[in-house]
Image 1 (cartoon, one colour):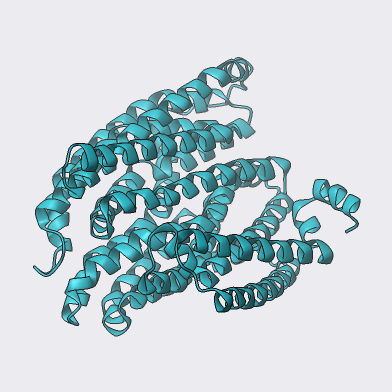
Image 2 (spheres, rainbow, N blue to C red):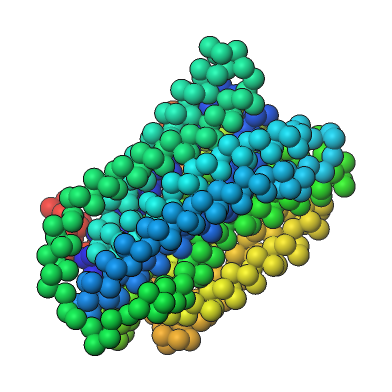
Length: 537
């Protein structure tokens, strides 16, 4: 694996981890300010917003980075700059159109969600909160093309930092605004949620400012490369350039929008299915637990895969353009191994400590903890889908991404209602797992066939990773049993103490076994090997 991929992955993963962690932690005070019922209203706004956002921008950073990396690898820096200039206008128009679409579709979406008068929210409440969140779409697309351009030059730091600042500013606006609305203005939690979702616009403005400062910082370097750019035999016209870009874009958009689409399927089918089995009075609450409160936890392990995919695509594109099959194979080997090495223990932690995590962030709730424990393993499938789709994008198999993604989604849509009627919330989780399993299986099959990719090393190391995780699981499970037998969890600080103890012991065991078996040294290279030799491993 190239040092650029390792470095890029590390930067993006750390940035994503901090961003996701903040995106989870701020729910603690927000939950306390507005209460359990209003949190459901919050998730009804964000799922349609995430879909509109994904359509407007999710493909842009990755597609633009791939386009820029491809031409940069040929020494042609002018074409990427040409795309950047015109792309700003295109993305601005995309943002306006997405904003208008979501704003005026808010009421029809609300009618799709409400299935019974027994539900907590009204059509008017859901319509209003969706309209408030739509304003962020005016700004976010502009950030996406700048991030993509910089990633094409292997500049991963601006993406990570801008995402982090965007999240911090948004969270401050959410919490301060909600607190003022409820405690000083004396308004309802519903009004606080309306302001909370509008804070996405404020955060996006802050992220745009950060990216502008990075652009100013790197512009002299980009100008120097532009002056020494190799003149292509044929300068691509705008039509040819955007035809090539949009050829990349649709698969990228689909990868970005697929998870919100799975959530949207739950959003429009869950309440009706629960009403049919006599559970309409709890359907809004359970859906909020699934699509917002526990989903935030589940997406934290996925950030490892997302970091890999964002860093992998430009590197893989460069190898593919140069027909360097050995470089591709090395990158795939390392990506699969490190992703699973980091993701599986996080998932195990969520499963074993589901009660403690849920009580720490929200409140003691047996149903919420059960949903979290059952939903956590699906994070592995989310991660595998993200990485396998990134590989297909890097090797120009875009049509397969579309086919495989839609196949999994259609399976989810077909079996969701029957499974919800049988297993309630767990049925929705199972339908998601089945849909993603099919999509991941098809992605990996295509990669294996096209690249003739077979790696016994990866298979052996995945077995070793599984064994180490099983040992860690057994130790942490019985440690927690012992702690709760000595003193049952009573309050958030008590839950936090048990989480820290179990995380420390589990992490120490996993790290020790990884170093003792030599697995960590093989995965993370010479720098770690030099360090571990000093420790006697």
